[in-house]
Amino acid sequence: MTADALDRPSGASTPSSASASGPTAARADASAAPMVEIAGVHKMFGDVHVLKGVDLEVPRGSVCVVLGPSGSGKSTLLRCINELEDLTAGRIYVDGDLIGYREVEKNGKKRLHRLHPKVIATQRSRIGMVFQRFNLFPHMTALQNVMEAPVQVRGLSRAQARARAAELLARVGLSDRVDHYPSQLSGGQQQRVAIARALAMDPELMLFDEPTSALDPELVGEVLAVMRDLAESGMTMIVVTHEIGFAREVGDHVVFMDDGVIVEQGDPREVLTNPREERTREFLAHVL
Image 1 (spheres, rainbow, N blue to C red):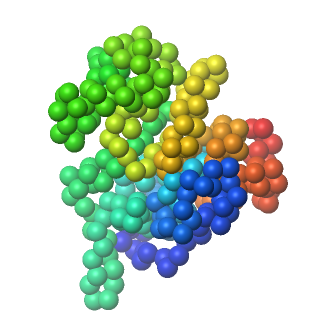
Image 2: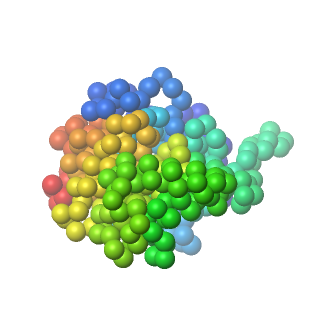
């Protein structure tokens, strides 16, 4: 199966109606085109079929929380959205733009052609991603870590980047740690620097891949507080996490994945309190 094997489906299941009563539904305009549209996405690593036809829409300004056991395809889905993995089949659109490919029609058939790496890099710069591990440059201070990409990728002057980095570090509660190196920061502080670094590129979409899983329990709250603030500011977010409380309180839409497919999705309060699918009930019984 190849990435050009599937035409774009005429429609995919949308969370907008399910999330209309969510805790922060006012952030999203359900009538607008979705910020993210995932249509018929498959991903294979050799003979291993990791994603098996995923369809999902994420309205702009909303928070989509993805739950599921290890190996269910959650992180792979995020990596496909951010073009860190090529698709085996299907299409992903961010703000209406086809990600990673251009569509060419020939002899009545639509085919996908991979974009040049520089174009892909430009697309990726619109998407911020925060990983389980902080991936900070150890030889740079917090301020320098946040400054680096805007200077190197966007061409900001060092003075502009420094001012923006200081502003973002203050936003995540680290104005007193700007000159500290990663080794001088706690895990929670390093993750907050990583969030500030992603925000420095002014992304339209933020992806979080289990951002608290590597933290000691007492440090989880400070990272989730920053993410709550981002959600309230209207940032579109897709969050892979096991933090059920965050999903219930902040999420507009929750997705449960298992074995490469979406088993169940909908309003967090409905899915987490009264799941329809037995597999969802089994998972929640182990994590709640």
